[in-house]
Image (cartoon, rainbow, N blue to C red; front, side, top):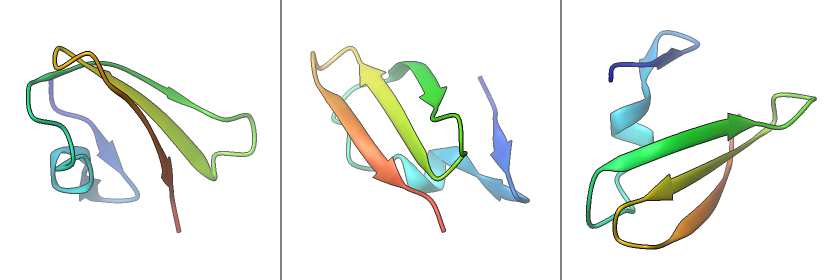
Length: 48
């Protein structure tokens, strides 16, 4: 899966997971992104 956000490849942003990211969801105001990974972690990312 290749996803761009404001012309930035999200795989560059989501480098905090140890296994592949399986799901993502943006907050309604698009300032936060939640990602879930096969490493059984969920991370919340603040987008600029």
